[in-house]
Length: 457
Image 1 (cartoon, rainbow, N blue to C red):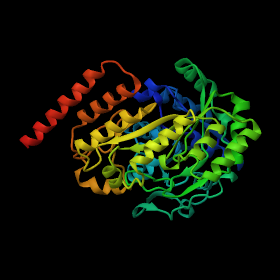
Image 2: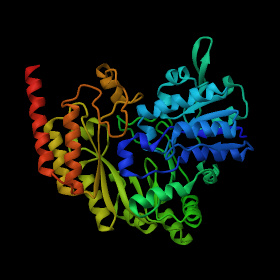
Image 3: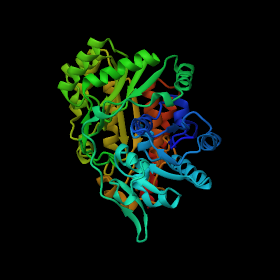
Image 4: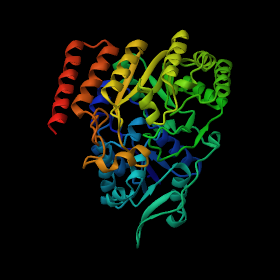
């Protein structure tokens, strides 16, 4: 038996794009929450549906552990959880019902639950944890009265009740190490080595992002940003290196190495401990100075993803991105000079974007020749300025089904089909895919069809 069974709703095989990529990572936030519960003497189990058959596996876990409480605790460090995908929500709702059928109380935490409290409560969750999870979950698991727990939402006689919000923790070093003993790491190793010939694990050195890009949803940390000490992060790298021998690390931070001083101290700590493992990370182009990039390379960075978003300064300004196109070019140059793969996140379809702006982005990609690109379309999520701008235009579909959906959910300049074709063509150009000419011809055809429809309208 277990006091608490933790799980999440990210089942890799429900997402064709993620199956194709086959880069699964353990649920880092979920096992961090488990470690906090265990630290306080609460018997905790984990059911991880990432690579498992979730319906059979979850029911088996319920029957085997017979928990007093189930918590669907999403991985706040996983971009899939942050995308609030419909298929993940469907699995979470099913887990709530399966728990209730056995008379077990069930609680939810995650970006989607925070955005849709009423829907999650209606699906069978007794409460929703809003904001940072650990302290709120601990208080709930220890039996504190729900009405006294900051960061909790639940039904009361007057409807949905929201307790006072809970501030985010600033001392991340006070957290215990993730409960890796609850994860079947061998399954992740097998998936990675079969698909790629190497094994990657995930870490996080910080929480949150202080920048205010107006399309970016932040239901967990808001605009707060706190980092662990560089020495503690390097020590965790060494522990993973010795315990699991990963070939590679993915730093899942929204912004890794925001501070130049932190970056230099981290590189020194990694070198001192002999903790170096090749890693990839994501950051901002305006942080990628020559000195910072040099320190990251010494620490083991091999690949860096930056939110370039657009090659049009006009679009970047409309997004409140606070970067210059020239800084994207400079960052790529600095990374290449240090032998680090430079990769760009791009976003099409932001309100007001014209075909000239799109051509500026295509031209930037061709000039920079990045090592890879990730392409999305503007996705309105609650709580953002962007959502407020387009809210009146959002139809019945308010969430993507999976990470390859790319549906336009407001009235954009072009059709969903065009944006999908554009993403495919640009991916082929960067990655060396086949039938490139045909891919760009399809973009031209769809653009012509869009123009015709607009004229007719």
